[in-house]
Amino acid sequence: MSKGYWVVRVSVKNPENYPAYLAAARPAFEKYDARFLVRGGQFAAPEGQARDRNVVVEFKDYDTAIRCYQSPEYQAAREVRMANAEADFLIVEGS
Image 1 (cartoon, rainbow, N blue to C red):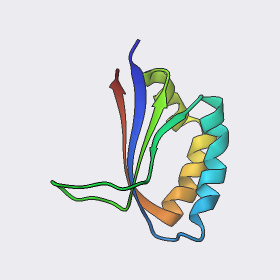
Image 2: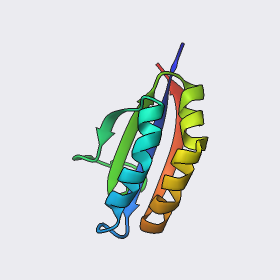
Image 3: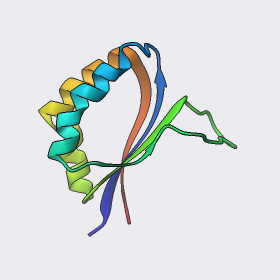
Image 4: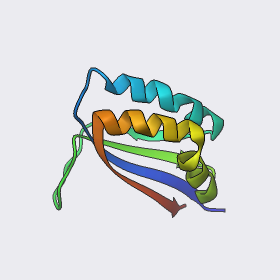
């Protein structure tokens, strides 16, 4: 079975409030066994437009990645994120 991934590019607008998103999202990440492969760090953007922060989260499969995003736990955290950051958010299936 193929794994599922969140691929997220983020520009934080309010760094002082952004930790509230991370705290709010933790229950969803724990419930769906999210595994962070990339959380920020150095990057190069040789093509296209970049954002300040890149995140890749791995789930056991694509359906679990979708369920985590759609969960009430994550949707509550999403509201906090949207108030403090702009993001491009993809959910993809991969190996």
